[in-house]
Length: 212
Image (cartoon, rainbow, N blue to C red; front, side):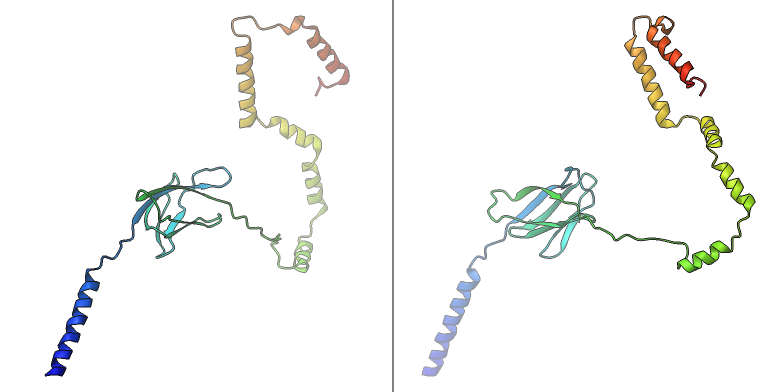
């Protein structure tokens, strides 16, 4: 009977201790909403489609076209930010925030990769190139045709036939508009009575530049 009473007392003590342990309150980890932008380190331009994730469980999100992101995390988590062509950065979520939210602007520096110089040839070896070149059997006529096409006079004539490109047309239009705005409300000067213009004209006739 004594041993039965002793066992009962032991079981009662264990159940009492277990009940006390179950009633203890486990402190909850605070959830923090992290919002911010990912920008380039050199120009602070928004970096779109960068990866932002929690290192604890490798879950996260991506930035939008404006570089903005928003991700929930626990206090003390490490947030990793990465993007192709940029150095990976990480930051820790503070545990002493007054509010359950955090704003971050994370710059990423460019990751410069230097590639070795590469030469690309249509033939695998120089000997193969020499064989293929000798098999062309260029005739003197083809050589003369090539020299004629490289004649400076012929190239100059072709150049004179080519019209203005977009940049030249834009520059000419801007100059004309600037001249019109400069002489707005008054008569433009007449170069017939301008001695400087006559001097330039005489010099052009003497040195032959007018003929060109």
